[in-house]
Length: 370
Image (cartoon, rainbow, N blue to C red):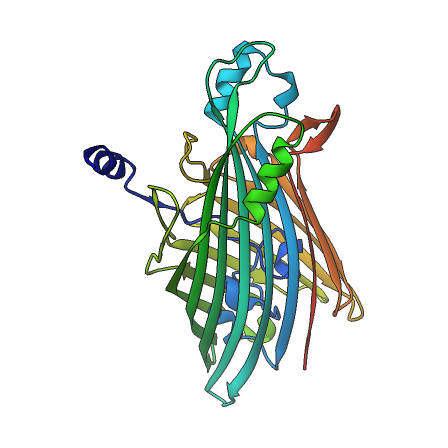
């Protein structure tokens, strides 16, 4: 009992603000720049104040998958000198992000107007870590696999109040969201050709998960010039730091996130947007392992050219907290109800003798407004 208490005190509560995340194809194809991006069905996810700027009814859907690895690609080239470094710091993450959203004007007025929104945002994170299990030699990597699975379902009820004036439009918005979370963890010996596959299956389809019901609060502000020629927005997410139950002796809390965004539509048919994380966020790399926490703090820049029947999106992003991640490059092609967007980073590793990016992802979605 004393040992358990000492370990619990040592680990304490782990604060994970996670990455800001990507919901919807429009912001995703523009490098993740969404905090000041109007005319976006997923505005409430990025900044609830934006739904007060948008006009009409907006509906959107999106499904996506991302892959990210650190120090795992060179697994087949390990020797006794590099094995220690590898076992001390490695991770492999698979992230699925899926959502639907709708926003509906509630009150129209010359000075005051308001909009409500509702959505369902589902994120699943599967992580795999290699830990030392005994003696490691040139011909033998004696390790075990720790797999973590984390599910987050957010159902926000959004409200935004917009105030029109001679100097522009001011909007304040809030998300009051129900959060259903689930966490599971398992350990496997790293042996046999199916070890990684089994670990993947465990991370994405864990059966020993423990659930949590919680609530979160997001608050956003936005200012826009007429016709959204210029928009500035700022948002704080998970301001109440919701607590998540885990299968680990470590505890998990969703730390607050803060992001600033700018956008302009001054060029006909074109929108340019920029986002900046105002503080570093902590990447989820699993619990009950010896891996150090890694910080992510992104700055992103993206553009969208809308030809009415189709739109083309491009974007760049950089992790200011970890330059080794390289540049993240995004792009997308949309036809309103169907949109395909991709991203990859410029940092390469070797997989089966070929160079592949350490991060890549795809998202399919769409939406409409009326």
